[in-house]
Length: 484
Ligand SMILES: NC(=O)NCCC(=O)O
Image 1 (spheres, protein in one colour):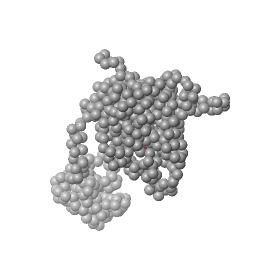
Image 2: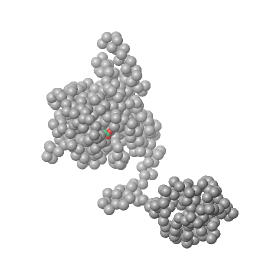
Image 3: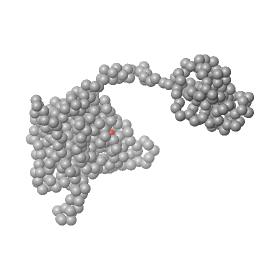
């Protein structure tokens, strides 16, 4: 590599580099591999937990890989997949030789993210759980004693070739521990993935591995707090969120949702997003009236790990492939639970009750409406006036505090316009005068505030005047009626 090129790269790296030393960005990673440097020269990010008297620390090294596709989407499908394998091989080797215990790849890592196109031919990428992608990764799992989470497009050949968005969990002996299928299918922007696969039917499994209890919440599932909760209830200590999402759609939410889930559920969240812009042979529309386009937008990478104590690693690059290596002491999960007691203070029985009602067709939301809200009557409140006040003496009244009075004070009230007191009120900047007759318990001298712009005064002879601005009078005219 010539000097100028290296300098340029170093400049990019120093801009991108994270002080905590994640292996960050395509260039740095590939330089690392090319120069045959030992990955341990790069110190990874580390989450600490307190020392405990009765438990040893349970430090787990987690690796996350984000990558762009390797060939244009016009290439032969077999070549595209092979090129991704070839690209990932050295990165997985780097993770393995860095001592990573649990490695997670991005959503549907073995193919371009073609779901936006709605063209069925991309289904050809789908493979069975024990297909070639699993086989490819099993060797590394065995070689490096590493658990690998492999999110693929799955074809269930035992069930009529049904297609799923699935994460396969490969154990550190190269065995398949199990799978989880994506629970929530996006129907937003270009992400209308229901053309390709069904809502998952595997619940919220937690996989007990040699290195801790892990779960996978695939991409769009991160917007569903109860999805996160369910993995937590099943005892997850790390929840992986392999994703494929673009800047325009979700970037502002990306760092917030993961951290919030980690805090609320007292576990680690490992977020992985793919990188780059993938262009497809045929343009497609998004059903929003905008012109057809041939790409999804930019997949912004930014993979990172969030901890239950609200700390967070720096993110990988927005633009480049990357491997993030993070050490985490899983003891932190219980320590945060003991400290904050979110599980203890939760009211699951109450939520279960609400949900049980909610899912029934005859569910009615528990809403207590202001009884006046839907009445064809004026909004009103009462403020006390000095007893000397009479309607004729009030020119401008500025009402500070408005004190609502129970409706039962009024059994009924009739409002009617009238001109008979016009003379007395004409000195006021008011255009309408109303005579009020009412029956009921309200006998004190007072002012009933119709709302902030208007009021009417009640004297002890049970007659009252409404003083209103024209604007309000116009507004309220059709609603003047009876309190009852
Ligand atoms: N792959 C996927 O579920 N994308 C949805 C977009 C998002 O949730 O940001």
